[in-house]
Amino acid sequence: MSSSIRLINHLYYRRRFLQLSLLATGLAWACSAPKKQSPPGKVLVIGAGIAGLAAARKLQSQGGIVTVLEGRDRLGGRIFTDRSLGLPVDLGASWIHGVKRNPIAKLARDFQLTTLPTNYESLKLFLDGQVLSPDAVKKGRKLSEKILNAATSWGNKQDEDVALDAGIQRILAKKQFSALEQQLIEWWLDAEVVGDLALDLEQLSLHEWQEGKDFAGDDYLFPDGYDQIIAKLAVDLDIHLEEKVVEIKYGNEEVVVTTEKNSFSAAAAIITLPLGVLKSNTVQFEPPLPPAKQQAIKRLAVGLLNKVVLLFPQQFWDRQEIIGSISYKPTNFSYFLNYAHYQDAPVLIGITGGSYARRIEGLPEPELVAQIMEDLRKIYGQAIPNPQAILKTKWATDTFAYGSYSASLPVGATSKERDILAQPVDNLLFFAGEATSCNYPGTVHGAFLSGVQAALKAGGRRQKAPRN
Ligand SMILES: Cc1cc2nc3c(=O)[nH]c(=O)nc-3n(C[C@H](O)[C@H](O)[C@H](O)COP(=O)(O)OP(=O)(O)OC[C@H]3O[C@@H](n4cnc5c(N)ncnc54)[C@H](O)[C@@H]3O)c2cc1C
Image (cartoon, rainbow, N blue to C red; front, side, top):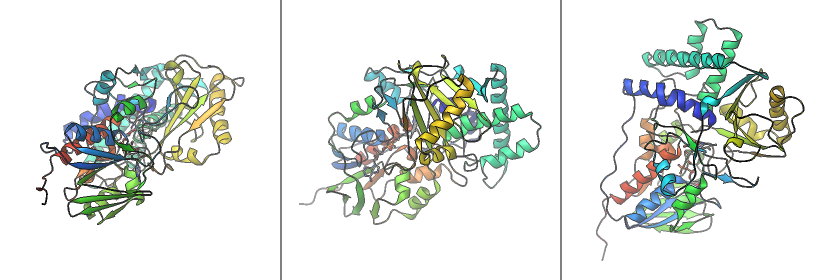
């Protein structure tokens, strides 16, 4: 999970107040610990995203023979740096969320990669083109925090889980707010909660929306591209691109993986297919996965975060890192990341989650640009130019992802489902990927750690003596 919006979310909610309340109520689910290591034999790793590469490296370092099968024609999965505009822009993950003790921050240091912090406090928020005072913005944040706190503590007293929105509406109905206060509350909820957790307030579980932990420290991004981490992790691994897996057969101490082109067999497989792909049933398991795992796949949800990258002929905005925009239309980007702060180029990146993210996937480009420019012209005047180039992500319809990440739980689901998703099947199939991480779902570091953990489990599995 994450962006400049996410940054705000993480900063104020997940890292500080949400996480504290989680710990206090003891709701965090204990992840199962990996067993001891031993050489794992031949293993197939499905997916060359961060989880798959982390698993493959770990297995290889334990003496395992590893083959990685990746369906796309590139590495990295939901870490994807585009360079078609003449500069590196991350269309998937951007940030290392919380650099203290974060394994991705350690990799960045080990690989000597440049990272830059994002200062979320440099937010400038506009209401229909007029800048709001820092005091008004802070007040809006405090109000939204209080409402979320009150809704959550009411929800925790209810036996049955309901949507976060139902809890919020219950609190709002008891209070009187000015029109400005209401708009500020809505903006903060959209930017911080929906923009971070990538599900609408109507979908998020009131009991579980704060699940997970965060690393301390600031959020840093890679001005030269997140994919540098991927390229370094992939060195010396046996990776086959454009091998789209369609079937995984397991039994008799063997796993046979069929792709659209070939067939591969091994003593075990580590499966890092995104939750969206598992939900889509485009990969058949033979025999079918155990009912509890199928149920977990059904109950967990994949959220949607999309980005629009706008390259302008020149920079017409000022220095703040985040430009927030409240408009009277429900269809607008609640904020833009000023990418000129990190790269010497006049680029703004709009980031949006939930239903609006879904809507923009189907929106023709001229219509989307017109909507964005209407908002930006209210702030910066009619004379500002249109973008000369634009990139739009479509993570929901990406057939190798079917969504952005599973940062939070929908109504009725619990973190236990993530643990079930992570459980090995018959000591042959091992599972990793961001959705299997109960501590850090929806993040690069969560996916990375899950890959290492799956490799340790696969390495520690009981191996029978070879037949003569
Ligand atoms: C827009 C966006 C912004 C984000 N921002 C952040 C952020 O700032 N910070 C952060 O920490 N996280 C962020 N995330 C989340 C982060 O990118 C993911 O949690 C993480 O990259 C997931 O890694 P993974 O290895 O679990 O999955 P993936 O990276 O999706 O890897 C799975 C691999 O499996 C492959 N695959 C799929 N189907 C098949 C098949 N049938 N056969 C073979 N291969 C297949 C895929 O192509 C992919 O390469 C963001 C994600 C998105 C989409």
